[in-house]
Amino acid sequence: MNINKNFSLEGKIALVTGAAYGIGFALAKSYAQAGATIVFNDINQELVDKGLKSYEELGIKAFGYVCDVTNEPKVMELVETIEKEVGVIDILVNNAGIIKRIPMLEMKAEEFRQVIDVDLTAPFIVAKAVIPGMIKKGHGKIINICSMMSELGRETVSAYAAAKGGLKMLTKNIASEYGEYNIQCNGLGPGYIETPQTAPIRTPGHPFNEFIIAKTPAARWGKPEDLAGPAVFLASDASDFVNGHILYVDGGILAYIGKQPQ
Ligand code: NAP
Ligand code: GCO
Image (tube, rainbow, N blue to C red; front, side):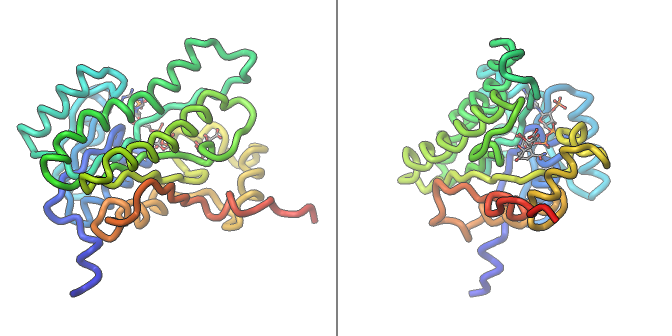
């Protein structure tokens, strides 16, 4: 049998949250190229329309819905609507996320809660909404978008690191609790990627920009497209015995102490 078939997503329905642009868009594009039907949500109609246009320009017929992933009743309604209008979800990517870069002593508890709500509670809410359909179908793939901050801390990102560290453990717990239903739950941990989220710390000459290039053996920022192959692998039959794993796609940052001073 041709091994490539194991990496096909033909006939699969993939929900990628927050995928009007950025990493989510790149992952959804790769899933469409592997044969999946793409469903995505974003927080407002304008973003959904922008996303639909971008998918259409690539020849991808996507289904887009407005939904705030932190709103549990709305998420339940979204999943019911998708199941009626598109079909039962085979692949869920919990991608939607925010970051607030504020020194901890200056961060309000409400700001901390907002980041936890989107980056950790929402993946719980959305996974909870889609798992029953996956159990009925007899299979499912859940991919949580983790981060370098699932493993490391740095100044000003206390809420984000707490959320992404929690998301790593939520991933392992979903894998443990639902593996017997042929549902695999894994994390994808991007390194530092060129998206709107990192634009403020990536401008040429910005100290953080130079810092990341020196911390990355690949000596460059990642592109959303660098995540496509690993994401398709985690969504495909090829990873049916991979469960509770965080696959870091970081150009080697986590392996490297950083470029030695010249
Ligand atoms: P991004 O450019 O900021 O895109 C995030 C997307 O999520 C946006 O479309 C955003 O919509 C949406 N979103 C935010 N809150 C939402 C909510 N409550 N409900 C629905 N959608 C919501 O971020 P990105 O860089 O593509 O990152 C995507 C994911 O990868 C995030 O989980 C991020 O933490 C993670 N990540 C990013 C990097 C990186 O270097 N970029 C590295 C590791 C992990 P709005 O525009 O309306 O906010
Ligand atoms: C930051 C960056 C990172 C990236 C990503 C790294 O301010 O440190 O935004 O957090 O978004 O999570 O993997």
